[in-house]
Picture 1: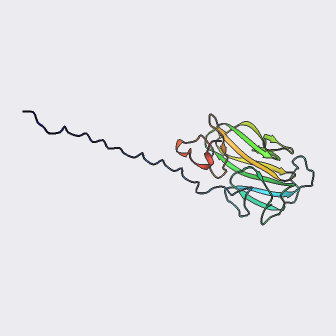
Picture 2 (picture 1 turned 30 degrees about the horizontal axis):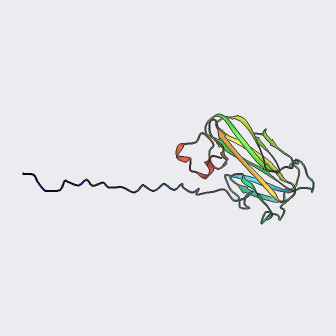
Picture 3 (picture 1 turned 180 degrees about the vertical axis):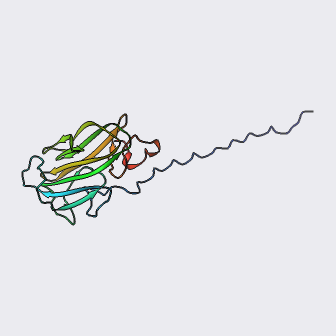
Length: 206
């Protein structure tokens, strides 16, 4: 005798998609702008100088008297308007220079590409060797170069100047072989990028 019982039901459970992981925020971001007055132990010191109106090229800062110093862990001043000066140091917002010096550490020997974007002029020296020359009065302009670095500590020197108001820019990026550019942080080791660090602000590809 045929059964009148309904066929068994198939229950399909639909799981909601797992929430996407939120990229971790940088717990210790670089100071905004050109730097801050408070000293940073593992950072760059930038000595600020007043320049004569009409300056067209980077001067030799040696022998000049600085107005004061600021400190930062990265040069990441993207193109923007600048009219606030340097609170606690100087109110200058044009015709000034900053001479940045410090060190950074490389984890793995190899060829490293550097990119320097500046408005107005800037240069990059690594271990006292000129790597990039972006000197002169001009809108934001990027120059690139390559240098072989051994593992260990290296001296970094970036002289910069701003001519007439109002626009500024100063960004220094690095790229190990086969990788994209990221802002150079002197308070973190530089080397091939681990995959787990790709969401880090300092290592975000440009």
